Length: 143
Image (cartoon, rainbow, N blue to C red):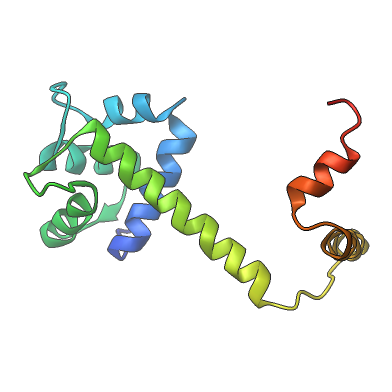
């Protein structure tokens, strides 16, 4: 298998994706990365986990340290549960903001008839309601 050389951003995204697919929840994912079972993820734990989770990945020691530093907010050389959780939540929030900005920034052209219907519904919701929540409450008869 040829080696995959990726940027630190790409490796972080691949790791995050793999963790969400492989483990039932974030606590199990943290425990899976904590190879030494000491309640923290060391640089060595992270390196061993990457070799297992992303076989064929080629990451320099410098890139590995850069990846670990993204999670290690205190800079003490280990990733705690709180730091792990904060980084994953931070990345999720950033992704949601980027998606929302993309939705607002582009005049979307319908690709399929379903897209056209969706765009019409969105236009009507925007026209008649101040928020999606308000629209939902107006049509939710079972509440």
